[in-house]
Length: 182
Image 1 (cartoon, rainbow, N blue to C red):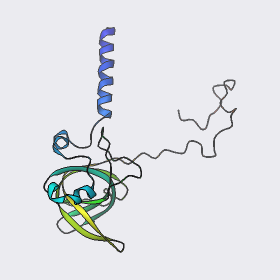
Image 2 (tube, helix red, strand yellow):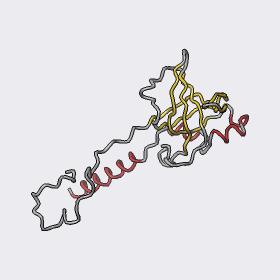
Image 3 (cartoon, helix red, strand yellow):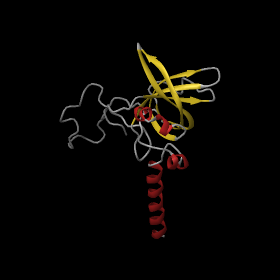
Image 4 (cartoon, rainbow, N blue to C red):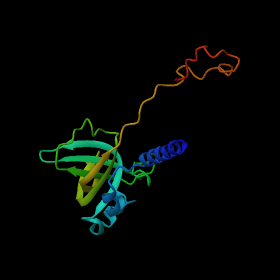
């Protein structure tokens, strides 16, 4: 009996570890796509990358629904090697546009959300950011993963940290501890 329990425990740990490392983009597209590219590097050698599948992601800047398609503007950020999720930090490689043939709700694809896209490089588009002209790389969507927004947790210590003597062992266990979550 203990052998079965042990094997079940090992199996459940393996399943949890495997599920924790799930990628946002399918294995088929990840195996074919070119990775670790930035919009700037694609623009420098555009003829080389045109028509190729690339894997990029970042933070959504805006969503524009046109009559026949939707354009999503993304600020590119490096992707995690383990999950394909955009990493946080100061490093970014420019902006790019993703074309969708169908309607995408701007409320769901809202500014600030993290997104990973496997798309085919189909062109360049020149537009203005304030008064400056900017050249975007345009991808045609093949697969998209919109990452869940991080959960907002209540502030643990709304009035600052408790005094140093607050959690000493001599306090009875039933004494309320308002700053802990059970």
